[in-house]
Amino acid sequence: MKLLQRAILEDYDVPVCRPKTLRMVQFGLDPLLLGLADRLIDDANRNGADFGVALTAANQPDLLRRLKEQEGLYTVFVRGERGEERVRVEQVVQSVIAALDPEEDDKALMALADCESL
Image (tube, rainbow, N blue to C red; front, side, top):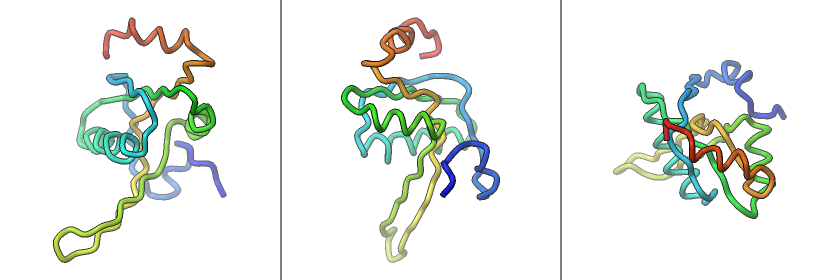
């Protein structure tokens, strides 16, 4: 299995949409934030916005490490119903541009306080 990285997105017909500007810091890696909030930010980016997200979370170094290995990319699977119709969406979220472990790199996290685009 290939590691999810930007270089392979075109191989799978995934539209590339990488934000350039850091606009938000997300504290925590709760599934609701990753699956809903970041997906909505990604939708906005696909429609012309430029909202990059920096993630940080204490006590979740493995998840942060995996996000770094995947260049901030991850896949969200949405299944449900819209009226009478079944819905199934697979979306590669590309809004994350940094994953910072506060225990490992507190200087990078504190540098976000000086970021004018936030």
